[in-house]
Length: 258
Image (cartoon, rainbow, N blue to C red):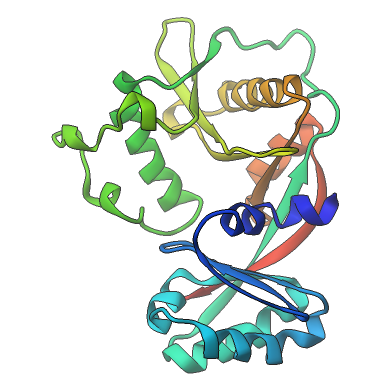
């Protein structure tokens, strides 16, 4: 189960119609605009596997470099060197940890945050869109991909229809105003928490903690395991999740090209 949790994003993309390369050494899945995810049977196989992937890859290698890749720590430098030579761009490495929560959340007594968790509505979309952009800038150190990258409050056409509304939740404070957001992905056994964000002016009030606790309760009520990814150097987020009872099940490395 730990491997399934660690590579949840790979399994998620694999279930959709994305570029999949697989042999006895490992598996690689590439989704447009997203990092390439690689699982290897053994890190020592990184070189032959990755050369085989590049030979089979049908997309633009430079675009692949722009998205980067995620792989086991022991294989990150090998894959980084190979792709860097192909695209002519230097790279950096960043640890990405996978956490899961099998028990109930641990909240400090007497410090409940007043408010409620609710599903995002169409009226929240422009606020949430701004938060998503800030999440990409602050947490991922990247620009929002796709059509949403240039969208702003004046462009109402970016608002998704009710049927296509992503499963994003917001935490409303007592006054009814959204203070934090988070998204849940689909899954049969595991549901991943993503886009956890609270704007700077609303931080240190417990809103993000209350939001994450509420999302975990939803997942546990479905009989599933909540999990999430967090960068190892994001000490504030690590402290938040570990304080709620999340346990690290493993780590991979993100290879970024600049």
